[in-house]
Length: 292
Image (cartoon, rainbow, N blue to C red; front, side, top):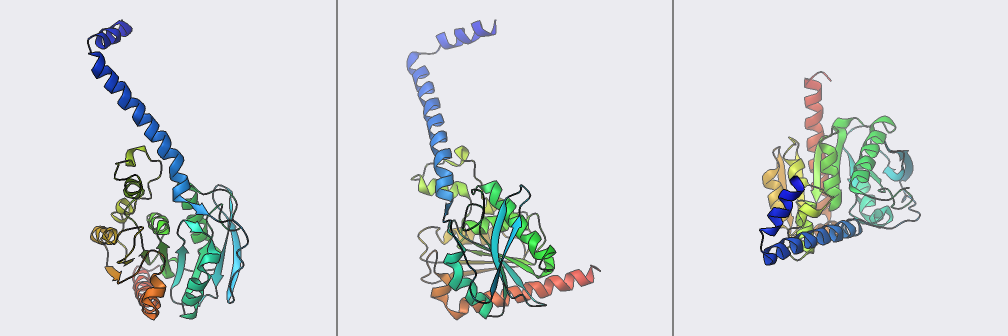
């Protein structure tokens, strides 16, 4: 009976309309399959290989909740004060961040960084769900193995690492969040890459800073280059408007996507240190006041 009803409906539809419906459906399927194939290749461009720690740093490895071994570095950690947990962008590995992380440590900040799965010497292959587990494992290593109290941890993410950091902040305690050259969401980035087509519905990956920031009442520092051609500086303004805690927006004149610390010079590290010191002191006061 139902089959006869469907046949009757189809017979009542002009062939041109039916052809259009079938064509649109096939186009949607093709677009979805294309996007699903493209997105992991665009989202991650990992580089495998050895990533020996720079002078003053030590290497570590730890296991994620799904049993993947990830590797990383940590500087000499101070007994008190902020310790930054750094989340890389999507390309290369920790070896590409040697200059940046060494400079952070020289400015008196403790810093922990890790290779996403499938990157550097870490096992596995990267995915959105996977790098979230990597972030969780790095945070657990800081607290359990390095003895860093959560109120001393400041999450700092660059580009896609900003989305990983923001997602972790919704699930694990920290004192503050630093977003460097972060985008609004994977859907927005996909639309830019696909010449304005609204492809978000076809994507698996979310990396949704907009949604996750709206869940947080956490101090946030947003840094973005005014000449960033990868993620427009307007994304920083949108994220700043969404953030609900104490927040700072720092547009860096002339900064591009990967050179903010070079363009801003000493001011970059001074700003990083001042924000981190302030939010960890505030977090410690709140913890003491709560009897924790």
